[in-house]
Image (tube, rainbow, N blue to C red; front, side):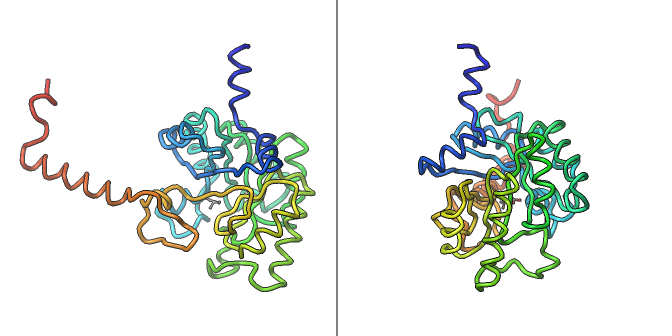
Length: 273
Ligand code: KIV
């Protein structure tokens, strides 16, 4: 067997995600923004790494995801692609890189695939993005949808409240989910919707659903890694499970380092040449 064949077999593809849904195997996903972190998550066995536009909040200190640019996403996606050997790397299309026209969306998605080397793109919305999704998927660009709470629309909705709680809004999300699948999306992220709605959409769709605050019935789950690692301290929504207290670890380590430098304990003889 050639090396290439071996690598191919190990790599998670959109087809593999579909097989996982069909077999009832849950899909685990995390965000990543750099090669080092991507490599740790990849080696740990994560299925999908999303270079989310949460990049704006997490790394750029922005209030929203809106200022993130295509160039910045390409830069971070390139790094994540280098760090990930097995996981499927999906790049988020930033605000205003796909809303103007299907042609512009197509061109920008192409830049992400070609310049960053990601394997798929993600965009937010339903009916309004189906034309763009169709164009991309027909040209071989796999697209992941994103429904429910869509952070790029924060200025339209004015809050990050859960979506789909009232029947009209729930029906709207259901209809959009069907539209995304019909347009050729390979998966859909469902963010901050009732678990019962997540279940209904997951059972309705053939393609996998990836939940974030959408209950246990989704085919997979995704979290922003800085939330699940406890690096973010001022963001504690119900849907985040914190697996570590990295903020505490960082703080204590840096304090100890400062103390060691100030007391002339660091570097010691064995740490010197
Ligand atoms: O930008 C992001 O990190 C996302 C996830 C929350 C799904 O879209």
